[in-house]
Length: 573
Image (cartoon, rainbow, N blue to C red; front, side, top):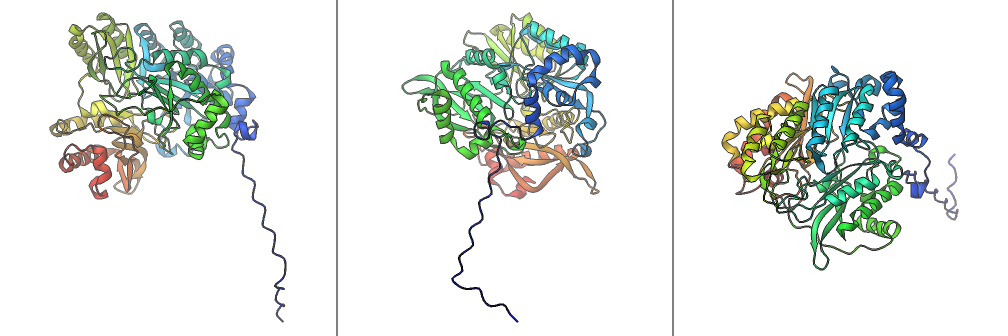
C-alpha cells in the first residue's frame, strides 16, 4: 500500500543555516588566538628572543641541546636554517620528517640591505666563509650572502664579527620584514632618477629587529629603486617603491604591493599613489602593519600579502591603508615610465662623478670566501671602498677611476668574475638546490654551471644575432627561489620519467616569462606546455633546440617571451 501524497499546503522547510566561515586568523578580524603550530610558537616566545639561548646555551652545549621550535622555527629570525644531510636523494624529500632531512650544520644568511657593502665588510664576510663555512659563499637573488656548514658553536663569534662592522643576520629569514632590495647603483649611476639610499637606511634603522613587526603572517619582501632600469624586480615583492615623476609634485615613488612567486605566482599591483621620498619609511611601516593585522594566518600556504590583495583588490587595500594606518590620503600618481637600460648592471658604466662602476657575473651566484676577499683586494687597489650585490646574483665594484676600468675588468676576470660574459653566463640564475636545501628535489648549482658552459659554446653562432637576452632560471623545487615564472626559460625541479620509465632528476619547463625591462614593456608569467618536462641530462639539448628554433622563427626583433607565447606548443617541445 502506497503512502498518501504529502499535502500541497504543507509549509516549506526552513533553509539550512549558512555554515559559519572558518576564521582566517586575521588579528584585526578574528583575534590573536593561534590557529596552527607556527602561530603558537611565535606567541609562546617571540622569535627574536632565541638569540640569548644561542649565546648562553646552544653554542656551549651543541646542536643536540637546541629545542625543536627554536631549531626549525625561531633561529630563522637570526638567519639560520638547518641544511640538508648529504646523500639523501630528491625522491625522499617529501617522504622524510624534518629531523630526518636535516644535518647538524646551518645555512647562514647575512643581511645586506640595498646590497651595499664596504670592502671592510666584504673582508669580514670572506673571513667568516673561510674560518667557519668551509669557504662557501653564494650571492643570492635577494642581495644577501649565504654560507653553509655553519656550526651552532661558532654563531656567537660570527655575530660578533659581523656586528663589529655594521652587518647583521637579524630577520634575514622568518615571518618578518626581510632584506630591503635596493638599486645596486644607488647614489652613483649617471642616469639615476632618485637615490633611494636614505630611505633604505632609515627603514633599516627604525624597523629591523622591531618586536612590533617581528610576528607577521609570513615573510615580507621589500624593494626600492630610483634607477630607470627598475633594477629591483619590483613586480614580485610584497612592497616596492619605483621612481616616477609627478606632474606637480616632481620626483617621488610609485607604490606597488602584493607581488610574489612560489607555487601561486602573482605580480604586484599599483595602488595608484604617489609617495614623496621623505614619506617612504612611514608608508612602508603602514603597509607592513596592515599585513600584520589583516594578513591570513590560518594556512601558511595562503598567508603572503598577495592573497589578501587578491581578495580585497587594490582599491580597498588603499582605502584601509590610508584610513586606518596613515590617517591621511596619498595623492594619486602616475606609473613609472618604461624601463631603460640593463637591470643587472654587468659591464662598465659611468657614474655621475665621472668615475665608473664595473658589474661582473659569477656563475649562478656561486663565489667563495677567497673570491670575495679577492674582490675587496681589487677594489682597494684602485681606490674603491664600495661593492654592491644585485638581485640578479651579480657583483658591482663602485668608484673606479675611468682610466683604470679595464684593469679592474681584467683583475676581476682573473677571479672568475666576468664583466663581458657570454649570453648564458650572464642570464642564468640558480637556487641552492639539493646540495644544501631540505626542500629541493634536484641539483641546481652544478647542473646550471655545466649548462652555462655547454650552451655558451654550442650557441656561440647565434648569441650575437639575438635581439634580446634569453634568461635561464633553474630551481630545485616548486618554490621558485630562482624566479622560474619570470624567466624566458624557467626550470622547476622535480622527478620525471627517464628513458626506461624510472624516475630521474629533471624539470618542468616554463616559457616566456619576464619582468619589465628594456626588451619587455610589461611583466608577465611564463606558460607551461602540457607534458613538457626534461631530464637533467637532456637539459642542454632542450635549451639549445628551443633557442635555435626561436632564432630561426622569430619575427624581426621579437623577444623570446613574445615568441614563446605566440607559437604553437609543438614549437616549444
